[in-house]
Image (cartoon, rainbow, N blue to C red; front, top):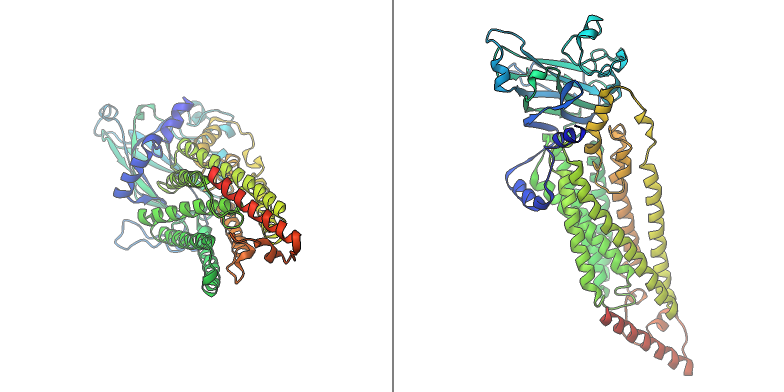
Amino acid sequence: MLQDMKQRQFRRGRIKIPMFVVCVGLFLCFSDVNASIHEYRMEAFSPKSDAFFFHGGSEGLYASKLHEPITDASSETKPSFKGKSIISFDPVTFVRPKETAKSHHQMQQNTGLVEAIILEVKDRARIGGSSLKSDAICCNKQLADQGSCNQGEVIIQHNPNNLGWPKRIKTFFQGDNEEAKMDVETVEINSTGMYYLYFMFCDPQLKGTLIKGRTVWKNPNGYLPGKMAPLMTFYGLMSLAYLVLGLAWFLRFVQFWKDIIHLHYHITLVIALGMCEMAVWYFEYSNFNSTGTRPMGITLWAVTFGSVKKTLSRLLLLVVSMGFGVVRPTLGGLTSKVVLLGLIYFIATEALELVEHLGNINDFSGKAKLVLVLPVAFLDACFILWIFSSLSKTLEKLQMRRNLAKLELYRKFTNALAVSVLLSIAWIGFESPPMHSMEKEDGNWQALFVEMTFLQDVFQMKQKIKLYFNATDPLSEFWQIAWIIPAFWNMLAYCLLVVICVLWAPSRNPTRYAYMEGMGEDSDEEGIALTGNSGDMAMKLERQAIGDDLEEDKRE
């Protein structure tokens, strides 16, 4: 039953992997992406214990900044939600089976009850009968006789420090009607927290009931969910950072344009892509914050820029580690392998990013994302192993040639990579918070809550390495610091790019890092005086080393 529940729960977000490319292509052509506007399209409730539930959404919401009364949505005056944090039912309709509807008389009242329950994650223990020493989620006759709850309703113990919460909104079927429409209602959020919305009913006769409509979730400053709101500012600052780096690089590029080597063009392209990626993400988040929906075109461009930049950044690190343009003029037979790895990585990353940024925020299929995240993680591991293996060979060649200037350059590059690895390891430790938020709790409702939220929150963020972070925070209780995770990896990539720009900056003396086919390349560079037989011997050794490199390139 648990497996069946999970399959039903994620039906909305499920993507068939073999048809992924086709489905995404069609989706891009015909639809926008809803985000803070959660839509329900005739979807079924899932059974658990003595209740039926439907997960209507979950987002981090900040407390309202203004506390003026909300204008009645049914009036002619347009409701004003500026400065308010709200969840609005706009509208929601429940459709029960015809057989159930026909079993009631036309004049009967309240022939079926569906409840919308909004709760903050810290109040999850107040749903269900655990406080009444019962495993029930719904109130039964015995508990009703004790005066603890109303029979046929979900058991809720209200928070004495926050009166009226968790919030319950009732909707009744009338007579033999097949549909019951919720009143257009707006719930104001006055306490910062991670909020969950569930639609539930306890009447077994309503089995087969479907839900349609939508809810709108809004923070005081816009529609961006709490997890994502700080990222808009971050992407704006990163756009400026890439702009400053681009201007500095461009001035240096123009100043020494006669001494430019092929590697400089690659670096220029990575800087330009990084600048475009950050700018597009900023405008995408800004538009999302204003409208509540993610426009497909901007999101697609942002994802594509990001995937291309990630791919070229890894290829740049790889070819630099191989000594391309420094100790070898070409990659030889390795060119096709490098290009193939880059192409596969781009496809895998693009697929993962599209799945992660399309659809409702909390409606992704955890299984689909698991299938997509594993190839990216494996390819990242391949890049890391190949980079350090190539770097080791390059350092060995430079030591054998006694090329002190280039050796010093690559040692600095190696130190920068080593520092980035150490920072990454330390950051992974930070991303793995203690399990203090997951204390053992009794009652079916607590188990249900964890089961319903675990898969959909895992792989919520961009980077693969934070997988353990999400696994230890299935209820998203660390949502206010979650934005730091993608921000860190973007900053780390930017810092590595700055290091490469400094080490391989255009200059009047490109021989300090450029491959030269002439004789005595290293002798001029290192200032070693070659005289007599020793000079002839050095030049012979240099020619032999160059010939060995060319032969190695051909073999590869």
